[in-house]
Amino acid sequence: MNLRKLAEQDLAVTLEDNVSGFGWPIKVTDPSGATNSAPLYGMSNDIGLVIDPDTGLAVSGRQATVTLRISSLVAAGLCGLPRAISSTTSKPWVMSFDDVNGNTHDFKVSSSMPDRGLGIVTVTLEFYKK
Image: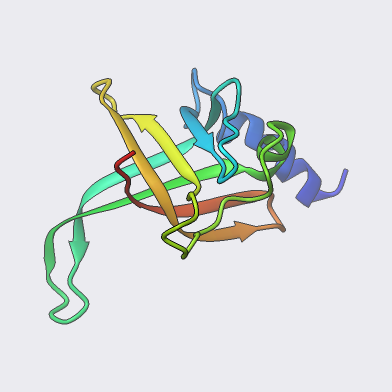
């Protein structure tokens, strides 16, 4: 089997395994309002420290990302890959997930970085108030 295809299949274990892997339940809502019926599993980060680009110093902030398997997004029947929606009158892609203490956080997609060679998409998120 081709190594790229094998690597994409391995994502079921390395990225989506919620028992012994990085898999964390993530609710994805596309701009049409469609939501994956069962949670997708991927890797999420919500970090409270960022680098100030002007000074190069670490400052308090918030940087959240989610990485998901493209084939799982397609199988969930969502309208394409998550991406930023710049219009303030249109609904954004929304990602919701719990932190390790069980608190749910909602974010909208501010940028999208698909890696079609491996079969993943990493999205940068910003806080979203419904």
